[in-house]
Image 1 (cartoon, one colour):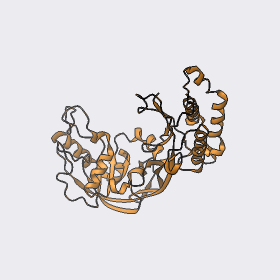
Image 2 (image 1 turned 90 degrees about the vertical axis):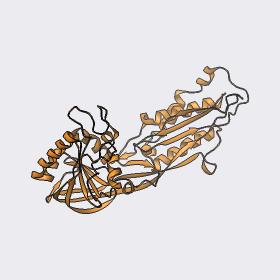
Image 3 (image 1 turned 45 degrees about the vertical axis):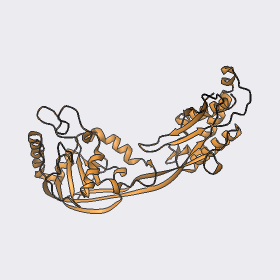
Image 4 (image 1 turned 120 degrees about the vertical axis):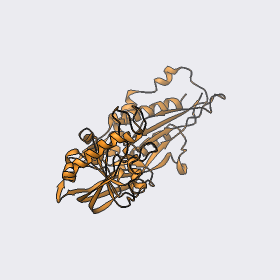
Length: 362
């Protein structure tokens, strides 16, 4: 028999996971040969009992790092203990502590020429890509092509010192008249086109304070931006700080760009066409009247993986491991409503508990 790990983990965002891993000494000395006998230990009544508890209002939706999630972890651990699974987690418990950062916007404001624009309508900004920052006044914006710094093509090559400055860049990457990328030299896009954070990291390396991205797919991207910006995004660990990775940024539509630049917008269009024709970028500075505030709400949270182990008995296979998984956390409350998470993923967690019990009896 191989060792069996029952692993439960959830993903609430691009950077959050929780796990329940079940591993235990098999309490029986004599193996059970009939698979049907073990399968029959998984009953509707026991599945319903586990699910009713995990999806109850008492668990408050099991939001990661919140009391309801911790109550769920305690319940799962108590069930594993009842099955006779040893506590192999930290300090003789079933738990593996996991740290998270939760961040969202406390206040985002953008004024152009004295007029306030609407966040998530006229522009958007993502908290995970920005440092917390009080209001800054921006009096000049430098158009810097596509914000790319690559051996094959660079907008920074002749840009001079950009320390503390604000740049305006285009999304995507430049193409020649045949539709070939100026970066790859063929019809394949480079990751400069697909990964805007690479542009934000590059700007940070050049000392840029703020990046304004003219998003060619602004309307298509807005719905996803709303979901991300309004939710409390989580990622693992306490050490990753956006101010150490990226220049602050906002993404704007063509309409907002025209408000920002006025008549100078035509100069940006001409500069883009020149890049396409010649494959070379030239920075252009424009006067601006911008006030930008990006204040964040950041919380450090702790969650728990729940761990156990079922040791195998086959001398040739016992050092191999089988992992089974399902996550037990959910999204918690939204206003006065509790999202109980019976389907996502109380049902999977309940099923895994029953599988663990059957395996422990094998």
